[in-house]
Amino acid sequence: MILSFHPCFTADHQIILGDRPLNEEDRQLIRNAQAVILPQGRFDRVFYECLAAGAPMFPNYEMRRAYPGKVGQSRLFEAFQLPHPRTFRWRRVELFNKAARIPHEFPFVVKDDESHEAEGIFMATDSKSLKTALGFLALKEGRENNGFITQDFVPSDGNVLRAVIMGEQILTYWKRPVTPGQIIITISKGARIDHHWKQNFQEKGKVQARVLARCTGINLAAVDFVFDLSKMDPEPLFLEINYFFGRRGLGGMDAYYRMLFRAIKEWLKKMGLSPEIVELV
Image (tube, rainbow, N blue to C red):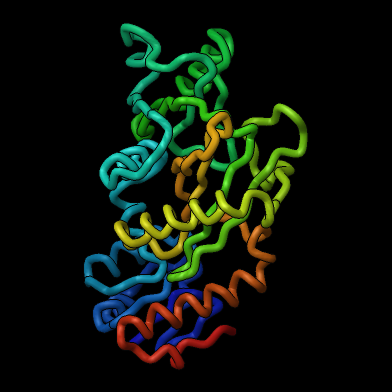
């Protein structure tokens, strides 16, 4: 039996929870399910109920659970020996300030653990800008805060390669700055999408994204890579994994759901289940 919690995909059973909690009937369906389709970004009680029942899920958020936030992702990159900028983890600002020395040369990057869309990401170019970044992080410290990371700056001229893992398919495009000298960029704040620039680098990113998917089981995520453009033939370095991401670079909402539909059907077929049961509505 295939169970869907996704409002856009019907299956043997479809549950649209909205704001209501799971009931016993829902839990019984989860326990009986051979596969569960979740909405993108759904990481709450539904996920944990499916996990406890041993039900295969699409998307698979086990790595998101095991390695949460940017601090967790830095551990993931280390655990699976994936190339990434040299990174240090800090539980509190006080511990950073007590360090014998700053473990990076200026400039370097400071990232809040739970930052999104470049909020909480700082370029420390000198002592003054570092103090500003640390002041922001100190205000956020509390019981639920997992700290922050500091990371070597990679001279990429602000260009970030995004590789979207969607089942067996990997799609890539660049997020490029619109103004000279812009280093920290996001699509929501005006970054230019480019599908054609440096195709050879895009192929390298696809290879590394497939390595990540193969060794972790991640089947729906947007992975950001950076390249050291001061080198003749640089390799991609993992920056972060985004489990909830925009669709503009994929051609918009309709194109995204068509690709997602295909990925889900391929996933079901690979497990020996009937993909015809699932329909896009």
